[in-house]
Image 1 (cartoon, rainbow, N blue to C red):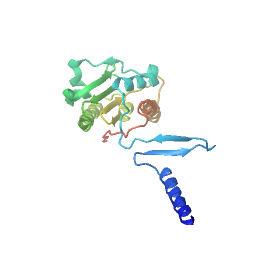
Image 2: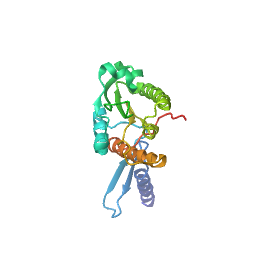
Image 3: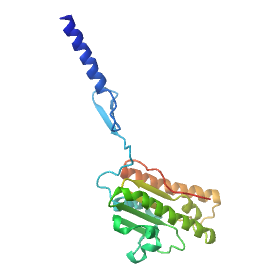
Image 4: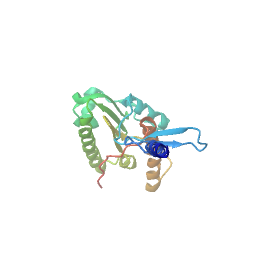
Length: 213
């Protein structure tokens, strides 16, 4: 009888240990403070995009948080895609996209380009293409300065099969601002953009922008 009791005790302890172990999927279970129930938090390990997320949904979220400061308000026509970051992208490998810019691109640098690839394996090539376009934009800006602080804060995000090229935010106010103030102004606008992306995806991806002085 004592032997049976001992075996049951060992089995009970093993079951408790298994229940308290963190799973490999990144899901952890934590008891609430009152001990009556448990909450579960799932953390993405591979920068995956939640099911059903579209480029249109992400663009709409960015437009919403920027409000009147969202000036990428003109869709790039198919005939002019070669002039925007999509110029180096094989569009036959793109499932859907949003391509917006300002009506006067020679004045405002805003580009909101978001694509969903047919296969996630092409996403890295899109990132490379976006970085190549950004490099040319930076070279152009040394000749014709164009909202330099907005340009310097650009984002290139990848979430599974979705890739984003984001240069956006409210234009610098007419009130005189020195360089430090303009830089902080641009950073504040991008914080809004980051919050919108995080709200849609559930996390903020790493910025894959290759910035060179």
